[in-house]
Structures are given as C-alpha cells and as structure tokens.
Image (tube, rainbow, N blue to C red):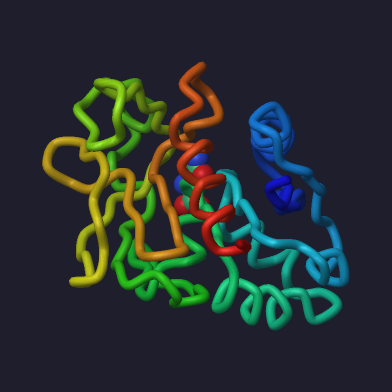
Length: 194
Ligand code: GLN
C-alpha cells in the first residue's frame, strides 16, 4: 500500500477550500491549517492565492510566521500567486518580508489595473498539451535562480516553476478543470515521503 500523504492548505484567507477538495479527489488526506500547531504532522502544504500582505498580518500571531518558516524550509510546498510571493527570495512593488526559500524575485501586481485579471492558454512542459491559466492581480517572476525549472510561461515570464520539492504558480490552477498541476504536486509529495 502506498503511503497516503496528508497535505495541509493554509486557510487564513483566499481560495483554500478548492485546493483541499482537489487534492482530496486526487487521493490525499487534507487539513485546513488555521493555527501553527496544525503543521506538526503534515507531509506538505499549499499556500493559496489571496493577498500576501493579509497573510503576513495573520501570521504575526502565536509564532505562526516562525513555525511556518521552518516548515517551508524542510517540506514540499505549493505556493500559488500570493503563496508564490510569500516563498520568494525577493519581493518588489513594494518590497515586503518573505520566507526566501524559492530562488526568485517577484514583482507584485505586475500586470497593472487594466490587465489585472486574464485567462491565458499556453504551452507547458507538463504532459497533456497546453495549459489554461487564470491570473488575478498576478505577480511576475522577474529573476530565476539557476536551480529552477520552468514548466509554463506568459509572454516569456515564468508562470509555473519548480525548485526541487517546491512548486509555485503565479496563476490559480484551482480555478480550471485541469488537475495536472495539483497532480504534479502530489507526485512531488509522494516522492518526498516514500
Ligand atoms: N496581488 C496579490 C498579492 O500581491 C496576489 C493575488 C493573488 O493571489 N491572486 O499578494
């Protein structure tokens, strides 16, 4: 019997329910994480989209930021949009604190007011053909470390990247019917836990 991983979804704000449902339908145990002590027995974590400044505010209590900082430096993490911003080494527009575990620079709200939401279909190196990506007040990755693999792009900027056990998207993969990105994360988690 393969080990069934337990994947947490940070549930402080944003689109956490859909991530949990999707991971459950792919066979994972899931837990909505609202307090730092809930991280204890998790194999991995999703940090969903939302507003990264609001996440940072919520993380100020009960030593949540420090506990999560340790977790993201050791376990598989999938950060989408605001989650990707929180993982980045450098954040601009404006600068703000982040866990710095993912070797990228990221510019917040990079597509301006007129284009702050977009649905774009582009090629991906994931098997199964082009990927539909939903962008909402999305960041843009402006610098990529050498250990990063790019799996999809928008106008030449990376939108889906992997650095070993870390996966990050500047779009919202939970808002389309395509399960490949969550499946990839589950594969990363399975590999890390067996
Ligand atoms: N604009 C948000 C931020 O800067 C991210 C948007 C999102 O997660 N959809 O944190």
